[in-house]
Length: 252
Ligand code: PGA
Image 1 (cartoon, rainbow, N blue to C red):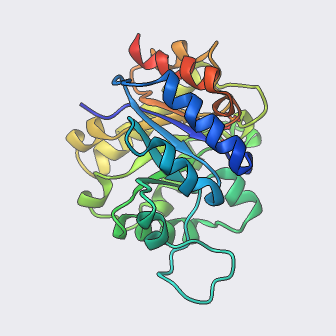
Image 2: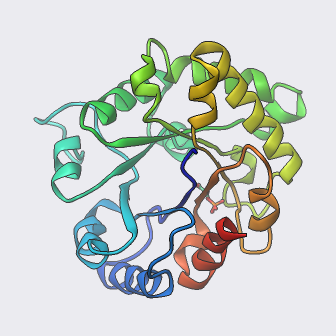
């Protein structure tokens, strides 16, 4: 059975006080939750204080980014060893905001993915089309090429560790969610591609998350789709009650 994951991407939000408060509240609301893996991804400066709050709970810690080099003169960057040393389990890679604003090209994404796996962390690989791609009927073509670039020469034993997040760029932070049918169609396409290029068992075991304006009022319908295994949540993960309500979609 593949993992279900409910992940909160806090992006560049929360002071240390906000982060501690939010993590404490999420922990209290979801004590003993077993229906999915719960993951929160605070900004780097808040990883350690948040880890102190959640370390004995069911909630796991993720980072929003990681550099591919081991250490050295890379001002402003964070290494895999650093993330590992504070108890991170997951790292988001290839998020469309990083691709659009911080130079995370396909080549950089591929290097980061490799470094994440080499540090025994779990990558959440984000892919997704722009609105104009969708309108031009090119969604599958874009997804296919992003996957080809990120997974170039990725062996089966690495692939077993990778979580994929389908995040249509036009749905991120816009309030426009992909309909359950639209999301399912792309998730199925991704799973079938993994089945063809690796093997059907691995495709069945791969966790594929949806992200893009997930809210408590659309999460049940999205989760009901066969190939949607959870969510990568931005805005709605910054409130403990909405994060909890979305997480509870995994129980129904
Ligand atoms: P959103 O962000 O839920 O605010 O649309 C999702 C994401 O960027 O991961």
